[in-house]
Image (tube, rainbow, N blue to C red):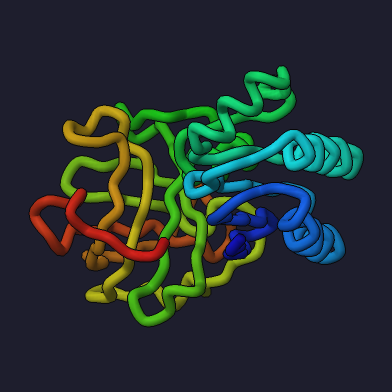
Length: 227
């Protein structure tokens, strides 16, 4: 079992690969305890590459959900594998936690965002981004419009800021990932962009920036990164 941890503000994302059974649960429990001790009670479990899961693992996930809710948090499942969905359905546990088809949507759920489409400048959706030079620093922003290229506001809330807004400069390359349900060929964009302009966001938090991007490649869906 391989577990990759990402911290996005006050949200922890655990991406797992392998099997979830009694032999691997101690490692997962250790990671959960680590995030709880750091004050993170909102957790995303990304299970796309979990090939097998048994009743003990589902029981552990259910107990973890109760622990997080006692602390005012929540556990959300993202990109569930067929093995997880089948096991959760067989045991009647699929109603215990929200299940989202993407990690971006799971993070948006934990941030209290319900919009999943962008019909105009007043609709908001979660966007993840990182600078090309610092892929380990993943930040969360709000995508506020898309015609002509993505435009986002950062920071959009009072959570931790892994990237200082002052670091965002014209000509800088960043990787972005966000949901576009109306896009043909796939519901998400995962691409490299370049910053066209940066302005102060007068309606946002103090120091917030409004940033306009353009895609580096013509077909944004061809872009890929580790985000």
